Length: 144
Image (tube, rainbow, N blue to C red; front, side):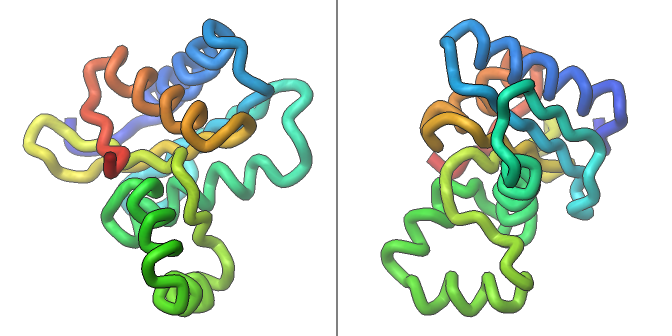
């Protein structure tokens, strides 16, 4: 697989939400982006709060923009706040430096997209993303 299609993106979203229900997570929002940072699908559970779509997209987009899972971006924000602040200014505030943004890699290790999840704690968000990707035979790169 060299790129993501709508069917695969929807499967990622569906599986992530199913994992969330299995572990009794708070209402989740899942965004799947292609390698160019374009939204393929967005799923928002009933009860998810107002800004969750933008947060999910920001987690996935940030992972793509910086080439690493948003867990590492969060670590950068703590260790190099001026740098991440400057990058976020360049990104017009679209970067969300918190776990839950996971790169999707193909069998060759090439980035083919990213998934961003929000709604529960960032660790739970990331767990749902990684579990969904791995259950579908995709390679998850959370930056752990």
